[in-house]
Structures are given as structure tokens and as C-alpha cells.
Length: 84
Image 1 (tube, rainbow, N blue to C red):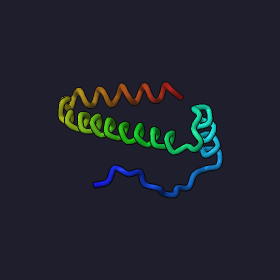
Image 2 (image 1 turned 135 degrees about the vertical axis):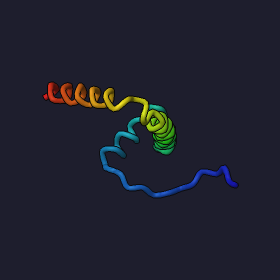
Image 3 (image 1 turned 45 degrees about the vertical axis):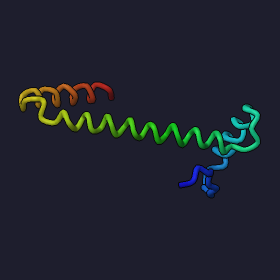
Image 4 (image 1 turned 90 degrees about the horizontal axis):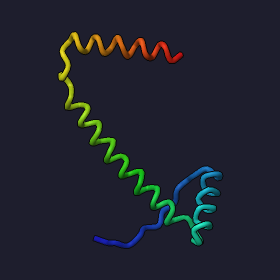
């Protein structure tokens, strides 16, 4: 197993590249690899957290009675209609 960084090619919008370069420059870095690496780490950790929340929510299935579920559905529907 290697702990060596890997070079790769990605496609990105020019404005994203400019923003990454500007951020790296403000940090005194020549390229944006470190900034992009941090962004990838943050995104991947967020995915882990989202998956945990999804599993927690799915585990709650059947926690409400049919009556409670119907009341909740009705309340949510009313709230959504009032947002418009």
C-alpha cells in the first residue's frame, strides 16, 4: 500500500479554477492541490455523515401509528402550501 499522492486530471469550470488558484495564492501556495484535497476530504466526510443520518431516519420507519402518520402528513402538506 502506498502513501504517495497520485496525479490525475479533472475537468472543471474556469471560474472554479480561478477561485481555487486565488485561494491558494492567498495562502501562499503555488498550486491548488492542497485546497482541492481539503475540499475533497470535507465532501467525503459530509457523505459519511449524510449516510449516518439516512440510516438513522430509515430506522425510525414504523415509529408512528397510522393515525399519527396521517396527521403529520396533513400538517406538512398545509405548511408546504402556506410557503407559496
